[in-house]
Length: 203
Image (cartoon, rainbow, N blue to C red; front, top):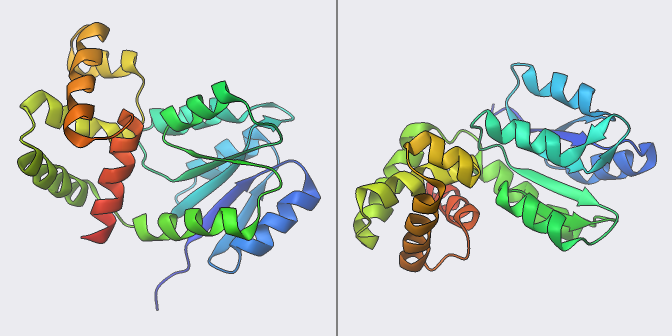
């Protein structure tokens, strides 16, 4: 019997957390963390998390800071960011960290695509992602550096972090990313990473 996927809801509004849990609970097990500290602890536990629904404004911190920590670990864990206001800068920041973004109140229609994608991505390992990158690199005639960028795109690294990882200047990363986006037709490196994960889940 396959284990049910596990989702973490990071939300300090108890009523909203229960509402989200009812929706997500139809598709998997749900844990609720009302603070950044509790969410951080939950994520360090050896549990097969399928996805995280993350509020931005929490009593002890900012949700995007936690998201940055998640991505710094190199994880491809799907994250949906929730907020009570539409803010272009926050949207761009969330997307750069390869997270989806939904304004409150989140409806089943908003959550369902995220839940299904998160479940589809369960169990993706490095070999499977690597195989997908290899196939895409061949079909798009990517250079070795463009292939490296595509492989790293699933981690949601910043330009500075990419430059440090590759041992090049940030302007070099910018130029090489521009070339990769032209070949893939994607709007951002984060979108490239999402495409890689979707294709890997379909293998």
